[in-house]
Structure formats: structure tokens, C-alpha cells
Length: 425
Image 1 (cartoon, rainbow, N blue to C red):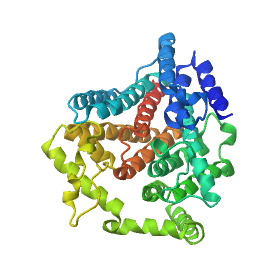
Image 2 (cartoon, one colour):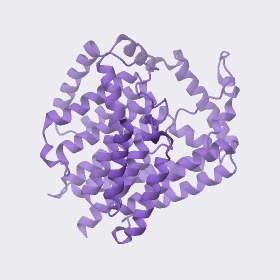
Image 3 (tube, rainbow, N blue to C red):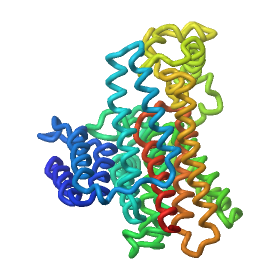
Image 4 (cartoon, one colour):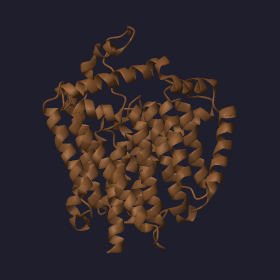
């Protein structure tokens, strides 16, 4: 039954995407985030759906070249191209070429599709459809884990997503981060949705996904989720017109949740944030980060994808006391992941295109503040920047530098600038 439903969605994107490139590319977002092969139990589990949808997107572009419009600003795309070229060079000289080329294949596809997105999406409604596809694709994982938590499940190390494994968005820290990143998007839809205008400003409708998001974050017991949520609250308060009211409401909600909703296990795990050295996982990450920095100093261009495999047993030399285990330990940070794999130049390019996307959104926000028709642009730019900041701070503790989330946010930022430019033309 699940396979039939997934096939129906796939055919929907195929049928409507033949003459509408933006729909085909939304289909790629769905495949990339949802990963239907991992959810399927039947005939779809062995099909290369990502490759198939990618080919559909390219065919759609060839048949609809007249609908392609170039972005107004090529700076971010230029840096992305340089970054793609650089990670290709580092992969050629990687320490572990078999593993490196496998990850390169995934990363380069993400960057290529990111760049193509910027030529395909031209209107507000099309960009909003991308937002909706992104959010709904992630909602399966959020609603599933949130429901289990509400029914009394959840917990650190518990598999909240049946059949999806513990990789990609299914990994608890990644799931918690993505869930919080979607809160600004939900709030944006509440006030500005064009596709679902009949639901605009209906508080109850948009309150439901927030409940599932919070339940999901609590259920994962991931400290990254708490960090991400605190960052969201601070950003929301900082940009609010009524700071005192929002601080009061959030304080009351926090006290209620801490007293009656979260479990003692959750409180105990979150308490390790204040004393990372007492937690084996957190202290192990900091030791690996020290190893990575020293590795990058002696290998300025990095060790290629999955270079962390070189630290098997070596990172233990950075501990004050002997640590058991000889297995390599992953970077657990987007910054150290890029630094260890692609050196200081790779990290510079990675940070540059993220910063340029953030600055582009800031410019859109500034330009639209004094415009009567600028609310959509203003709040869209604010939403994207909030999600980028949440990713950048939360990502300091998880290795998701080459998963699609940040690249889609960057693509959305380029498209937003393009829409603003076209509306002023």
C-alpha cells in the first residue's frame, strides 16, 4: 500500500512536471528529502528514484528552455561552482578514494541541482511550492517521531522512524535540527501563504505542526535540538515588535513544558550541555576536533571526503586519560567536516556562499521594508535567514555539511533575490 501511494506521488510530479520545470524540480526535493526507497517495503525499494527524478528534471529543462530565466546575482553561484571544483580536486587526491568518490557523487549532484534550481524558479508561487514540498517531505519524519513521543515513546538512541535507519534526516540530531528549521517556515506560511490563502492567519491550523515539531525535538532527546530551539526563540524575540509579550509567553511555555511535559531522562541528557567533559560523546567530539585542526594544518588541502577514517585510534592521543576503542570517530561538525575533508580553502568557500546568501536576504529585507507590497519579500527573507542561522549554529555539532538542507536554503535565497529583481524591473 505504501509503495502504491509513493508511486502515485512520483507520477504526480512526472505528469505535471513535463511542461512545468518547477514542478519537476519540486519532485527532486521530495525524493531528496523523503528518500522513498528507504520507506518502501516493496518493489520501489530497489528503484533508483533519485536518479530517475534527476533525469526527468534534465529532460524537462530541454523541453522547456523558454521558461528558464537567469538569476540576477551570480556571485553565490560562482562560489558554489568554485566549491564544487575544489571538492572534486580534493577527491582526486583523497586518502580513501573509494569512500571519497561515493560521497562526492552525492555532494556534486546536490550542488548541481542547487544551481539549476536558480534558473527554473521564477515566481513567488513557484518558490512557495518549493517551501511546501520541502516542509511536507520532512513532515513524515517529524509527525512520525512526534506522534511516538506524544504516545509515550521517544528517547535517546531510540529509532523513531521505522524502516528509515539512522542516517540522513532520520538521525536524531539531524531530525531535531531540521524540525526547528521548519518553524520559521510554518510561521511564514501562516501570514503569507499564496497557495493556501484560505488558511492564512488561521492560528489553529498552523499551531498543529508546531506541536508535532516540539514533540519531535523532545522525543529525539538530541541536545542539538535544544540548542536549535533556543536559537529560534532568541531570533524570534530579537525580530519581534512586542518583545516583552513574547518573552513572557515563551517563559510561561518553557516553565510549563519543563515541569509537566519533558521526562526526567530528557532533563538529565540536556544537563550534560553544561558539563561536556563529563559526557563521553561530547568530550570525544572535542578531542576529534583538536585532531582535525592539527590534521588540516599538516594537510592544508584536506584529506578528501571521509578523511576522518584516518583518525582511528590517533585522536585518543589528545585525551588526558586513556580512552577505550580504536574505531575512527566522525567529525560531528559541519565546520570540522569541511576543514578535515577539504582544508582551509574548502572551509573558506563553504562559509563564503552561506554568508553571501545571508547577506542577499538581508538586502531583500532592507529593500522591502518601506514598500507597501514588500511584506512577502520581507518575511520570506527573514524566514530564510533564521533557518540559515539555526543550521549554522546547530551544524557546529553534527556533520551535515553535504546534506541538501543548507544548499536548498542557499538556492531559495538566490531565487528570492531574483524575484525581487523581477518585481522591480
